[in-house]
Length: 559
Image (cartoon, rainbow, N blue to C red; front, side, top):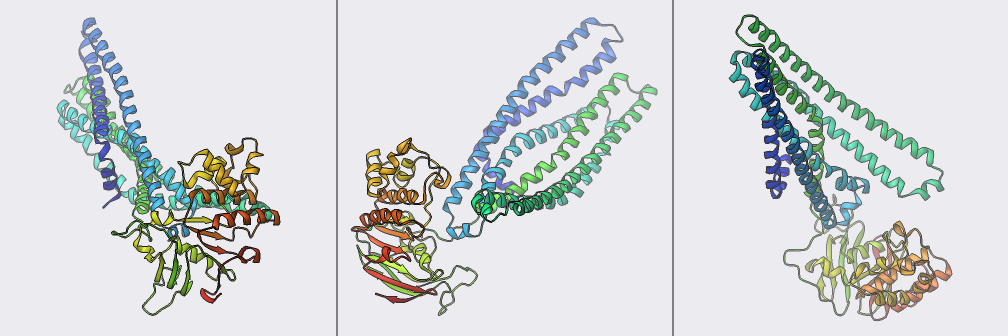
């Protein structure tokens, strides 16, 4: 299905608003067409006959049409601008919702900036298609059609001579259309790269400055911008050539009318007023055609954006609920990894009997209420194990069971409701401390938030802040120290009250005092819950019931 057809299907719920806009476009056009005829009457009848009454009537009529056209134009623009923005907003919501449904594997291979561009810039083309392209194209098509009828009614031989120029407009458009589509796609690809680069660099100022890479980053960004400039210049020049040729053709058409029409006037076969009206109507034919061709760049850009949006919407999550998935009612918290194989590289699909490169034949069990520590060198597969447990990815072979339930047989929402994760680098959203703590339980009361914060050793430092629990943490919690962010993250996990806990090196980057306070909070939180802890420090794992030693994607020892 073509992207434009999909766009039309998407616009179906807004059909009556678009129909109203189209009707108003038609009305504006109809109010415009009588003007040249009024001028014809003035020149051929009112002025030669010195008929002041007819002159007054024509001026009143002209004024009425002019005022009505202005009123209807305002109504038309408001209607189509409103529906265009409504469609853009609805598509932004749809794209964002689809992004939330996609699996972690998708985001592993995408730049954040590109996805932001899809939600913001590309969806904005829906507004342009409706409020700019639709208004002008429909109005111009109606105008051209209506004027051609009038021209043939006035003097068909001259109208036929005028139409002889129209095929050249079509040829000019078709010649440049495909090239503009290719150049528009190239421009979008380059711009996506620039936006992705910009998003990464703005998000990492400390890294850039710590390595003194400011000049190098400026140079690389400049190269991207210059490439975009040259690409856009080519696209702009192509559109300019298309427009100039169309404009020349329009001038040729006007010249044909004046030459042939002037000869007809000299021969006495046409009145001067008729020639003036005919020439004015010619402007209503060629100017809209030139304008429609000039809109080609906007249309091609919009088409390219629609292709990218629908390509994203057609992306299927690699991890999804099965049709018969049931809600997990976890009451115990027994975790079992049974002959688990996994590979991040999806191109290396596991054939029967072949083991995964990332994880190979993982077997161990964590009983309800136990604390299992996962240890081993970096890259041994510890974090991959917890990603599989949270079902960010699906196993390629074997099973992961929770209370005897294969994770793939239960809904992801019910599974993740039973799991609380505290990462090495805790991610906080812009907003207050209270908002971040209640992220997992939006309905939580202030008293519950404070209770969770006290259990996480986060209450005391929060009360010392100027706005206490209403203190803004900044983007990614930049206004808090590493230890404070971790304690807020633990409070968030406590408030969620999960049955399964995962700590991914939650204390590895902290000082001794922060580690002590977080260790105390972790121990409180782990009571009565099944816990997996990834850690390198002995202090973090010395109270574990079970230690699983990982090496090169395999379990080497359990003790």
